[in-house]
Image (cartoon, rainbow, N blue to C red; front, side, top):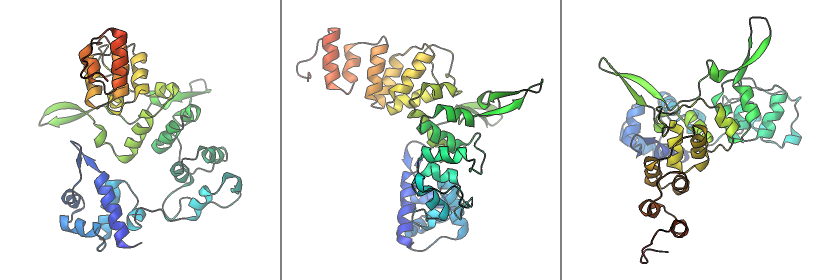
Length: 324
């Protein structure tokens, strides 16, 4: 693969990287990460030359991509294992010798997830062809959440433990040692003083972001019931951090789930939060379910037809100049 394709891929990775304050990663900042100058990054993105091996290792770790991708313009080379998984399910010969991992360090599970193919996951799962442990596997959990596969998700977050009388019982790992990725309090020290702060989404690595993205798009209450996320505070209008992520991303299903789960209270604060992020569907849901129904709030919703309908329903007077 030519260096021009590699340079374009590096630039794409850099421009997608978002730092604190929604700031994009600059060439100079990336140079500091791997120990080169801004000009070196600029040259590489322009298709000139290669880095030393140690720099590719640092880039691979920082962007959470394989060195193989960095050296081949972001493309996956077609290995025999990848071809095996890619073929139609009816053509798969389960007696064929399967070597895992392949030359790219990937396994059957990696490719099943890459191709987003649950039918093949079931086939390989039943035949016990996966070589890695499936328990507590974050990439697998993200895949199963995206597919809304509650029963399979239960299987990969529970395990057998022997009770005192010798019988076996199932125990959810959530209640024992397993921890889902948390947007939770972390402790650090300001001098000798202990300080708590909330972990933010942008601080998570790529795998954890994928997990939260899959949760936010989840449409299964059974799956959401399995998550150990607790509300921030004890008040009726307090919710888990993921609730506020749903406010930001205009996801009514998650907002409604936690509102109902905690028999909660939606307030002006939640409405203003949704308006701030232009989350129109969520703002409408809060407007309907909170004691905040006023002409001033209604006018803030970015949906002229809804404003007109609710103004008539609630008897609000509208300004003829602004009425749609």
